[in-house]
Image (cartoon, rainbow, N blue to C red; front, side):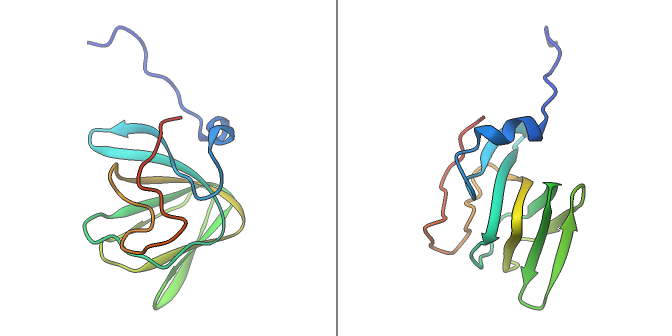
Amino acid sequence: MMSALPPVIDPLDKQQALAGLWHPALLGMVNSTAIKLARIQGEFVWHSHEHEDEMFLVVQGRLRLEFRDGARVLEAGQFLIVPRGVEHRPVAEKECLILLIEPLETVNTGNTESELRRDGVLPI
C-alpha cells in the first residue's frame, strides 16, 4: 500500500529540463513500458525498430510521421503507434513536444547509426 499520493506529471512543466532537441528523457514507467519526453524540430533519420512498437503522442505542436508509402500528420493530443519493423521518420517543421511510449531499452534511431542516436535516457 502506498503511503503517499502518486505525483501529477505535466509534460509542459518538464520540457525545460530536457537536454536539447532529439534528447528523450524518462518521465516515468508503467510496468515495463517507458514514458519518454522529447523536444524535436527538423527531420530525424529513417529507421525502424526490429523488436519494439513505438507510440508517438503529440503534447504541443505538430508532428509529421513519414513512412515509405506516405505520411501522417499529428496535432496536439493525437497519437500514432508505429508497429515494429516499419521504417519511419519523424519530422517537425516547428519545435514540437512529444511523448514516446515504448520499452525502456528502445534506441531512438533503431537500426540506423546516426549522430542523433541516444543509447539511454535519463530521468527528469
